[in-house]
Length: 111
Image (tube, rainbow, N blue to C red):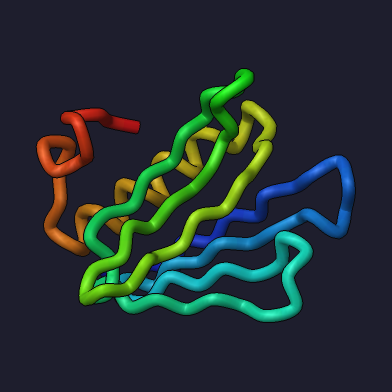
């Protein structure tokens, strides 16, 4: 994959805005009221997942399950409906690069 995928995730509180980026081998996360960025090579990621559930025990999030004893990365998000397809495409591109498909998600879940 040579295409760069970049998604800006806005928030009503501007300091919580974030940008996620994938260039085919490295995932980068910027913002989300954090002073440092996060970079992960796809060889460090077991799978990627995005959830949009909201409720008492559920919060929308994007998650990268780590491997090699790496905990990975989990970020709470509150994306507007219009960028949810972009987030799903982002996660699907990462899983495709890793070699994962829906059968490899935990509990057989999909996005």
